[in-house]
Length: 181
Image (cartoon, rainbow, N blue to C red; front, side):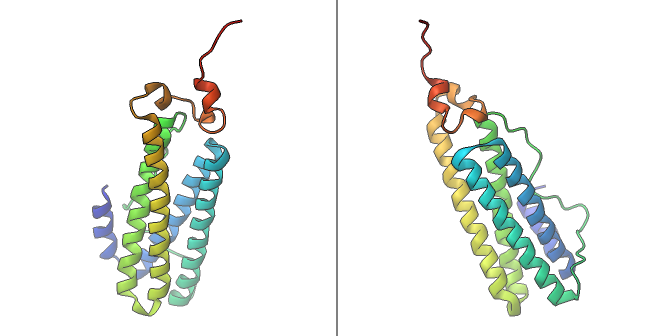
């Protein structure tokens, strides 16, 4: 399902289900980033761990808002509206870039959803405006990493297929010419 289709379906739902979807989406995104952190190392691991922590913080903010609006934290997730994340095998640089492109779609979807909620609930606009700004920031950060990886690998299939565990500090060693003594 495309981002526009997801948003079109969401905005027609009752507010409780929209907020429920947002909460569950933040949780799903957190798990996705934790998975990427587990697969990578060094600075990329730190980057994905930070994103996971931020998504968890968003979830907690939304749960508090849910309690304010509806008197509880028992949120309802609407059926038939998927999250952008998928389980993707991340074992090479090209797989990582693909996973990060999925993350870009999710971040953009979340930003648009929070922008919609900011307009729909102006009394809580500061919360949704903050969340939308956070998602824009995540998008920009991920995009810069994607652009870097694409720049480094452009026209170099030997880089594209580098096992993910060599992406960080060991990349130069993995790609260095091998000589026999």
